[in-house]
Image 1 (cartoon, helix red, strand yellow):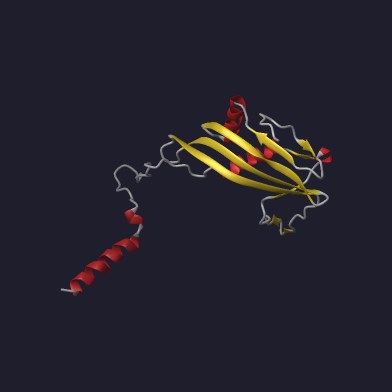
Image 2: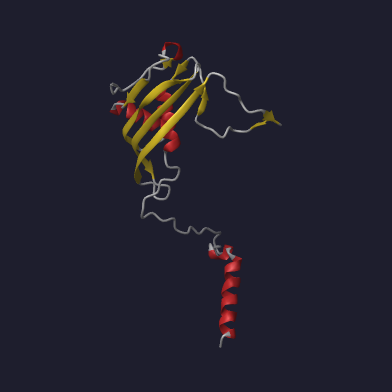
Length: 186
């Protein structure tokens, strides 16, 4: 059985039971929700729950499986009005004692394809995993359903502004082709 809690201290790996599942259920209070919303640049964070389990994976590694549920308010990318989004996501992390890092070639390092794998330290911080999972699952460009980005036209005084249509020279050619094709049919 798991008890819902507002906060969980980082779990010391040495204290985790190797033969038993460790369950967790995080549901931050309104004060904590406001802190998280501010940290992530959200207009609001109404609900947040992160529940799951941590279990041994082999002799030295640990697997976290969880579900994240959240209701967030973000500014619309067009109107800046609040956009409410419900996020539901299954989260997995594999904490490996020995994690092979990619080689550095000419000062560049390629990112590993599997972003669910992390290096195992002395502790596993469930709250940090929750915050990262929330940040990664936020909509990148929240937009109200009716919001449309209109055409903005700027120019120097006394000159004709360049419009979107002017930047499409082939659209004029296509219209000319269509006109010529119409003349051929007569």
